[in-house]
Image: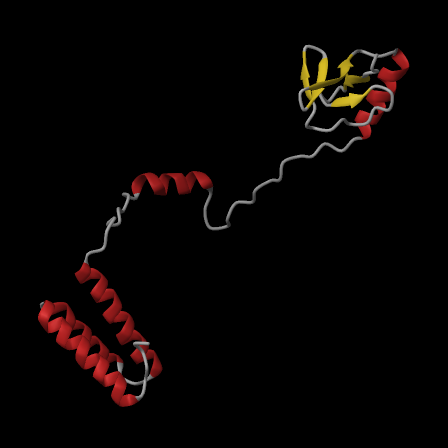
Length: 161
């Protein structure tokens, strides 16, 4: 007949070995005073002798109980103020799908922005080109893209690779 390990429940509620008072692994499962590991019975939970109870209580008292970490609040506002702000502020829904014209405007503005940051054109020229692009229809936008590509080729800036 197999011998089973004797366990006890410490005052803190942890499952411990009765003989040593050490904490048992957390993957042990207790059902009806029986301890299981991976579906197999490995021991039983009991009260223990007076000496064992004192030893378990003494060790449990020394055991460090892990306390949850305290989350520090940002200095600017409290969480209650943040909740009030969220209630007041309407939810902004972004479009689920960006259409072709919107994507083209994003790409064109990115190309203009990179040219301005590189110093190939001034901010004013970039703003003028972007305003023309916003007002243009699809055929005119295609012409603006072609002129922009030609501009990059002339100055030696290879944006479209």
